Length: 159
Image (cartoon, rainbow, N blue to C red):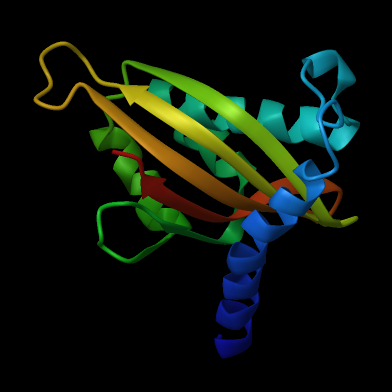
């Protein structure tokens, strides 16, 4: 457990640095259109959209299919780590009205692992006390048995 935790801490700590290095090559080196995305980036962006669609529609099976069995999430509420089962239990209580993804980036760490970062703005129903929530998200995706699964999720609230 200690090794895994240390490994994930390194991935999360070095991810922003690596992303900065990837974009520091100069203007025009970043792809702007979906058509110019790498196949991995396009696949993972589709997976992330499918993940949020499933969460919004409260489709536990579709959401679960994208998560690794050893999935761990850390959300912005300060309640600590959540397992796959705990996150699936939250779907019933969710009230996502609309969501918007922005700044989607993929950093391939090796052929079977990638760090995905993006900003998510969630809009809640008009009757909700809180109408909007913006978070920066980092996700670790791993390829297992030929399928890309989300292994780790971390969100940080943007004020």
